[in-house]
Image (cartoon, rainbow over all chains, first blue to last red; front, side, top):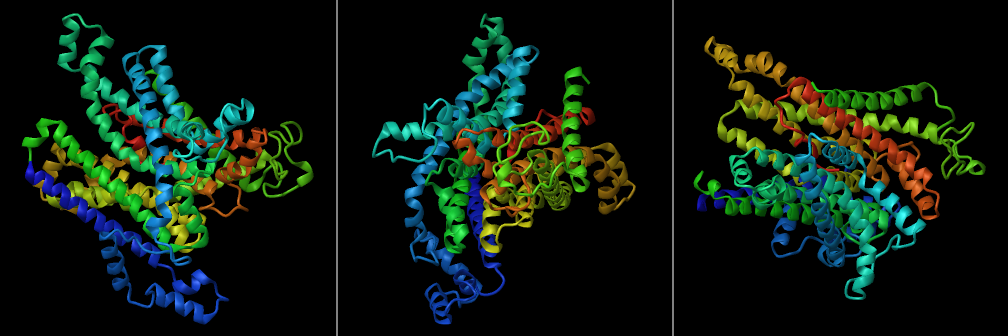
Length: 315
Length: 281
């Protein structure tokens, strides 16, 4: 057990290191002088030189990399080339927006996926099961941002029930905060839920074939009863794993959805930084997102170990 | 093969064929110029001569959709090619290697799982400026792990077979086994993965064009059409956004169904599509 945890932690640290190197290489691959590119070709040479000095861009790349890497250990992900603002202070107001979107999207995806997946699995030889499968197949093919646009037309423009875009901080007005999040969360959840429901379906089909379900049926449980009493808990392990792994997808989905609904989240920070070619903000924000994904993946692995006793004894 | 499964295959193949046909025909002929802006003609409803109407610039919708199919297929083909060319040999290598080498390769590709196509594309666009090339490269690299995993799993299966044992005992080299026995046997699995990855690539490309991180605005793409249509959705004119969305969904559905159908056709034992959703849109 201890060995497994140690191996997992070592693998995690290794991944973080490699990921940081990858990110650094890409953002440093710019041909020519970074400072010149940022300020434009007509910039005052003195200003270019000052920018270079201020951010240490005249140092060798390995030194710049190590400086950035060790900075991250103390929570310094870098500073904007343009404004000097730190990555952390730039993105901290945005994190809450993206997290509400991601967590809300995940919650509704689960609420949608479990019944859909169960119907698709249990009634797979009936029309209703086939319909559930077909719906998830369609949900899988729809771009989330298009779903968002259609929801806006239906519920904001046409019916006028919900706001079409914008964001209100939770602290200012929780009711309006929730109303502004309904449509973005739903657009994420429709797509993510379709993906998830297919995993739920195959997990349930697998569980349905188990001996203990047959035993439960034999002592008088109905199919649905046996499944809810015994099956869901067993199917949940693999579904939880998938859910953890899907977080990366959800964060990315959130970036696009934020753009549809003009939400001031991490996506808008990133896109604005790309438009201004503020490489340090991009580098730091992407690193933070990747770090979040790697941490979650490691936690999912470890929780799997904790939840399933059979895995503990194996090396 | 049941009727439902046959239907899946044909529906998928049909949808893909429509997209391919639209793209090929658009190379020679479109009803109107797909880039010609005519403000006087804007937001026409479907009718004649504009069969599907015109968009907010007065561009003929049918023509712009047809031309958009080109970028969609181009990005799909190149991205899948990048992913397969790098991912498959890695997977075969991992499948034929000792345990620790194998897990090292897997760990390395696992790191890529933390980089969805969109994040990679943002990195590339920030550094080099967004283009069709940065989009294709990002989507291709992000699709590598799926190919590596599939290729490795399939290779392990082949390596456990008796004909490989026979080849090994008769002195065939590892390279010989890889080329003569592994490659032809994992082909079908890779084909299925390619179809599934194609769908993912189309979705990713649409998102990138929508965000303005991919193909430049002048070139017709379905994602860009949605971006341009957004303002009209807000002003109560949704048709300009409905059609490109349907085009994307239809194309992705086509490749997904084709993948599912091929899987059932080639190897009924393969488990139901858990490969699909593993990575990003």
